[in-house]
Image (tube, rainbow, N blue to C red; front, side, top):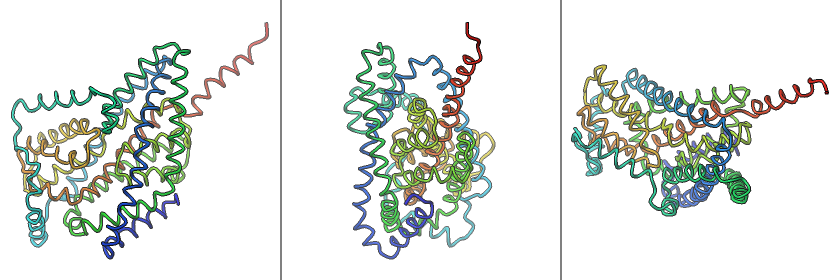
Length: 432
């Protein structure tokens, strides 16, 4: 049930079911939604227990500060690589340059058939001068919850994460005898959520089949054909990051590349099925700590933190999407324009934590506004292929978080070596 062949077979069967039996695909879709609800119900308890427990442990460890500096370096490197990879593929493949007149006619007909969908999220081409400051102030206010229980109930992941970080810092300053009972309770919650995620994973192939069938029945294949060039760019960008992430994990865990792929396969299934980075975090933690034997305390801290900061998927979307629209409308971009696209896309991607895919997509208009290229009409095209693009974004983000955590966190061998060296030194000392 966990083999790559099973996943590929279920995806293929789902596509065929959606094309030839759309009514049946829609009828069974509630089963998959029920399964997704089961997956998502353990996410917040998992995050709260793991982050608070990890922060408490790391506050008492004087060497923990060095990990936070490495996270900042990872954000810079990942943002640069995201813009570079997607920009290179877009400039080389030119997905927006459609030379076939018939394809351009079909593209226009599809956009017109969407009615007012393309203008529902209309933005001005050039933002007002004070828009940037207002946006930054709004984002800053949204980070801090005024009611943590309301944030937990509404699933505001970034707000919950900030509360957990601050609460964990405060608990770390309390003497251990006073905080021991809460520490044990959080550890028990974490272990119970781990058991639940291991139970749920057996239903992933069937949920994948149902979701793919429902998505295919809803959108058909025409939007995929019209946006084939853009999907190729996103797919290649995603594949590049997945391949690089597997290489990093293989080197750090001292496994073969193929063994790493097989080990990470359940995580890929979760990302494809849920299309949610947050819902995939328990599997990332389980993969790195239980299977690959990285330090549990460090992994539990770094995975949620980097999931909020390493926004690989949105950076790929903004860079390739803006270049696609510019090519579609024949707008030539000079070197300063390309630099503006790259910097703006990387910065804008950092603000997308906790957003849904359509809201992430709508923010592309901000980058288009700086270049004064239209976004509203092309929005319908991106909406039509949102399921495929969202899958690529989730896969690239999840794999990047896993690889960056494996790069930063010490492995089981590395944590054991200082202990073994100290014991050998004690044995070598002559008795006095």
